[in-house]
Amino acid sequence: MTNGLLMANKTYGTNFRVRFVLDQDPTALDIHRRSMPDVPVVKWTLGKSQTKTLDVIDQHFPSQHWSESVFLASVDCKPGSNANFQDRDMPECLRFTKWMVRCFERINPLMWLIEQIPQVRKMLIAEVPYVEIVPLHEICPMASVRNRAIISSHPLDFEKYQGERVYLQDLLADGKAHPKLKGKRAIVVSPFGHTRSASALTHTVTSGALKVGEHVSATEKLDFGIVEKLLGA
Image (cartoon, rainbow, N blue to C red; front, side, top):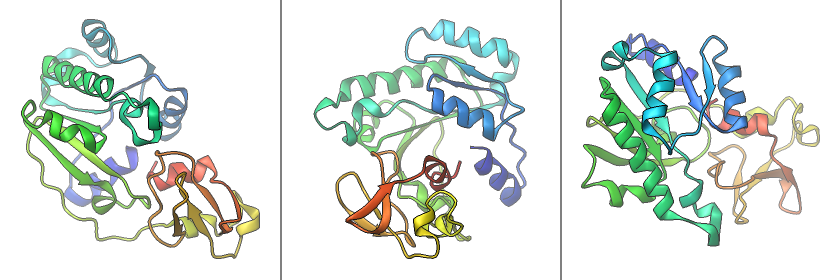
């Protein structure tokens, strides 16, 4: 998130500043704290009481500033994700997403935006001001494929990213995370057995553990630090 805001500030002359973060996932909390050390990062479970959630936000970011701010949310996609196979729960995924929409409507900021799995678009298109499927890898320098439904209080127009990109092969070059692959041409294997060159966009990194190696029969789980970088963290 921080890298994205810095890029927006540099490209468009904007001046966004992150004021607080709410999350319930320990790994996500750790990433937030490391990437935004000066920002309050609060452990909190969304999807339950909206009133208590607004009270927690108000404690860290007073409500008098809400109307001039932009609120962003990446709500839990696990219940509806294809990676869950037989355990998918689209009703729960949709409930949580709608809960977040209603919460943002109560906050009534200058603008709000929610990221979710593409499958929710057709279920929300008649209920929200804007929802479209956006290939995030086409609008930012992330090196993994990531198509997401972007739900917003306002219509959005995204420009395609034209700059440089750091691919998985580049991240493997120093051999720190995967010593056996230093100086070698690698491939990446998805949880479904699909392969790609490490010099191209990888599979979606949140759909299950990716593996990397010189060939399919000699792979190892991709280092989490590299996964973060593929996501642009």
